[in-house]
Length: 119
Image 1 (tube, rainbow, N blue to C red):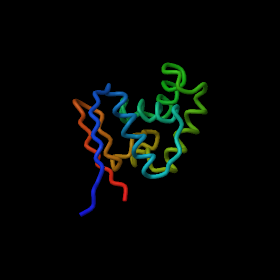
Image 2: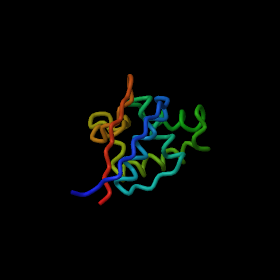
Image 3: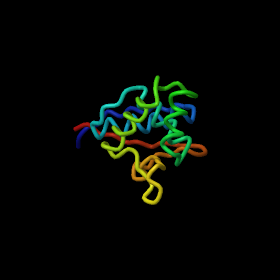
Image 4: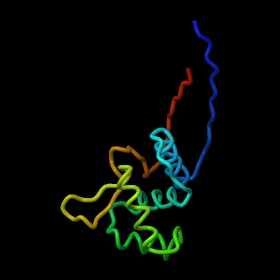
């Protein structure tokens, strides 16, 4: 029988940090390169929910100051489209949201239970 070294960590995080952690984990496992600003942008989009792209670009650049310009936010969103992190509404093409297939939890008390094994 193989011996496995088990490491358990229990951490209480803010909702924003736990959402960001879910994106970090997803991107790491799928080999998607993201910057801290990209993660902030994804976290903001997940908190705002479905939103028109022009409003989101304004919010991310002017209100939350994640990026310096709205065009930079738009470029970031295009990167998310290519990596299947963000989707557009089929009826209203201007409406963007986090891909539901990512299974990112954003509301209420969130308990993450990941189990990883190295062979």
